[in-house]
Length: 307
Image 1 (tube, rainbow, N blue to C red):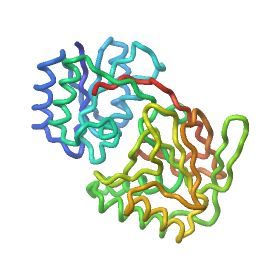
Image 2 (image 1 turned 90 degrees about the horizontal axis):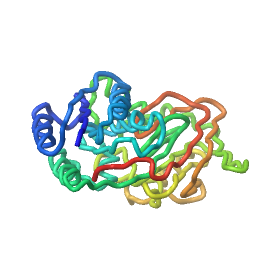
Image 3 (image 1 turned 90 degrees about the vertical axis):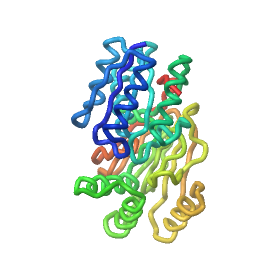
Image 4 (image 1 turned 135 degrees about the vertical axis):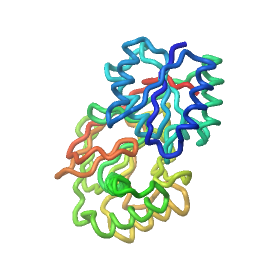
């Protein structure tokens, strides 16, 4: 079996020594090529070329950003039975996608499971989401959650380490000092023209959990799954009291937020989110700039994953 391992040298939790051990282990089962990403978008280019070259499995060694790039490269020309399968060895700080697949957070333990699956030719078909022209594996967001991610990414550029403390500090700083809470900007447009207005932030989930905080689950829904459509959670305004209640439900009670200020839909095939002005936008935990309109689609059985 031909396989390509794409390693992110900047991955948070893997060293060069660990990578060497994992590469040797993988070469015991597959005809392995190894590539290292050197810039943003490089992983997508490598995965797209792997598809053209007839590689059977592409293995991600990195975090959720690396996984997202590989998925977008693999599916650059659409869903097809010619798309290589994807395997994941977690190497980032969050590893949300790997954990959603049931993989351990330790890269050596995860490699052991991937090796067994490769040996047995075992894979799972999963559904993915698409936002405009970009694929995502577990979540997307417009508004406050994307603003928090933007704030964290800027802190990391300044040399701070990704940690639970950084996310907690960024969340409170963003909400209290920077987020515009004056007026809801967002509308949700469903097929047939039904419109829900007066929303301040929207999170779209393709699976659970979605988390900012390392191993601690943070999920705006408890029904999202790789086997169903997309789940939507939104806040009707960001009033301090109601927002505090929602945050307590998420962070302290580890359950989905409820109450009059929340709005949710489950298992949706398609919809659009429109804002009266551009707002921060994120996919799979990566800040992608600002957007004022995003069209979402659920794609069942979009990708085979080795697990």
